Amino acid sequence: MTSSVSCLTITAFTLERYVAICHPLRAQTMSSLHRAVKTIVVIWVVSCAAALPYPIHTRIYYYVQHPVTLQPVQDSLICNIEVGAADVITS
Image 1 (cartoon, helix red, strand yellow):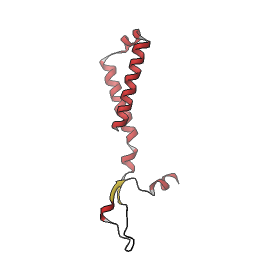
Image 2: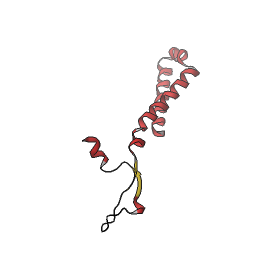
Image 3: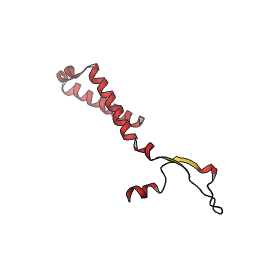
Image 4: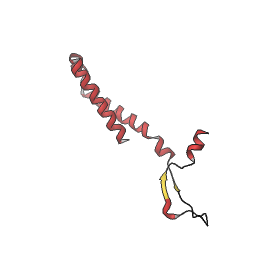
């Protein structure tokens, strides 16, 4: 999520600089604290929405089984999207 916020913030700065350089009179009328707060809120909401699928599909499971007993190896407990989950989603 923070990566998305970073990229979108840089994009917002770039667009603001473009407007300020190419349309200086419009930039003066568009600049306000209210607009800046709206932009920040939109950036965070979009970033949260973009990051949401990962925690929804993430599970805690044992990644490795003992080859003889087929019991899960205790040290292989991970938190990730299950390997077979992609096949279920695309089917």
